[in-house]
Length: 170
Image (cartoon, one colour):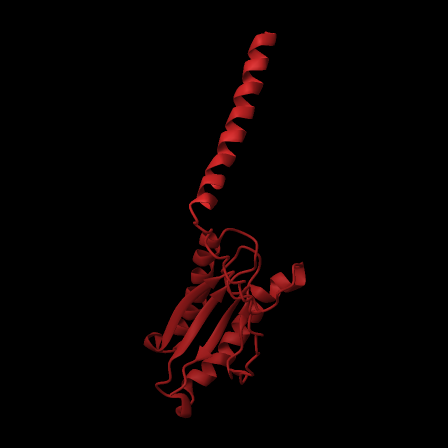
């Protein structure tokens, strides 16, 4: 056992001493080590500049939904009836509208995308049944990806469960 440890130590010392010989012979030949690399120039990231955007004010009102639901409540039915007046006005004849379905942050991305689409489709169906032209209403779901309120409480979640009307600029 003692002999094995002595042999192991001898081998380690031999390897260290022979490893240094290569550098000695390199200097003897007149070779020089490569020059050191130039120090890297560190540039700080550009500062993010907020570009002011004009707020898009829609004449159409949003409708909200209960948790995990897509049915139209009585209070929201009254809002949709008000929105119908906009669709039927002469100055808005032929104008297209995007109806966006939104959800709160709870639930999976996939589930919320489907629920947001059901909310948008539900609001569209309600308007079409009242007499709006369905060809002028495009529906899309954003699920939980574009919250109106970034909060993490029941009040914020209630504001985020909505169908948002966005008239196209023509």
